[in-house]
Every structure is written in structure tokens, then in C-alpha cells.
View: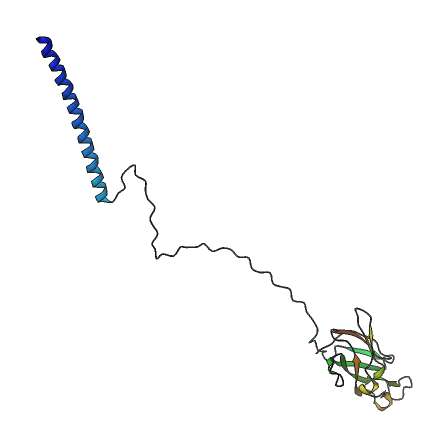
Length: 212
């Protein structure tokens, strides 16, 4: 009889232990739920849960970092002398053994009135007498005998016609220190923008620009 009662006591003890454990587990679960509710009310993130990134506002514009763009390399400009004009006193050369001077006034491309082609260069120049009128070594200058040369190809260009030039300049009619103007048309192809000019009994003119 005593053994039976002892067994019942052991069983009751075991059941009591199980009941106590279950009650403790329920208390723990209840406490966790209360903590979770308290955290939600305070706005904090429960421990152990991943923190979510804020969702961008639909109206917000994403910020793009500026990209460094290399400045374009400027194309070098090739200078031309198609519009270059002779400046006063720029081209002056001695003539007739320094007893006269020749100055270029203008060298410009013009249209041939007979053909309409612009393969003609009109050269205007000034002749100044330095020697006395009685000097026998100074005579005449014939503008139609003037020639030009391409400094790159050495091609020579002559006067269009004696009709397109001033008649021979007689130095006998020019007093000492006085001057006379003359001109000549030269047959120069288009695209030639620089000339070497040769006038009889005069130092050559090098690198003369042709203006349009």
C-alpha cells in the first residue's frame, strides 16, 4: 500500500513539474508579446529583425553625379592671305641702281571682263625718281614686261596684254623726288595667293600677298 502511494506521489510530482514548466513558457511568450507591442508603439525596430531601407518617394528626382566631360580640342585655324592687303611702305625696292624706287600699292585678284574668269591679278605700283633729271643712266620702265612667279612651283606668269598695262613710263618726265603711278594685269590662276614679282631694273618683291 505504501508503495502504491509513493508511486502516486512521484507521478503527481512529475505532473507538477511539467505544469510549472508549461506555465513558465506561457509567461515567457506573454512577456515577448508585450515587449513587441511596446516596441511598435515607441517606433523602434525589434531586436533581431532586419532594418528595411526607406522607399524613395515617387515624386523625388534621383541625384546624378556630374560626369567630367573632356573639352573638345579646337581645330587649328590655318591662316590664309586671300584677304591680305598691302600696307603703305610694306613693299618698296630700289630700281635703276638706287636712282629710283618702286613701291607696290596693291595686288588684287579681279575678273577678266572678256571671259569673266578670275584668273587675273591687277598690280598697281608707284615709281619715284631719286636721281637728278640729268642722270643718263635712268631711262624708261615698261609695265607690260613685269612678270610674277609662284614661290612654291616657280611657275612664271606674264602680263595679260600690253593693252592691260600702263604704257612705258619715261623717267625724263618725272622730276627728282616726284613719282608716277602705273598698273599691269597679270595672268595668275585662281588659288595662287602669294607671288614673287619681278619688275625690270628693280629688286624683286618676295612673298607678295594677293587680295580678293
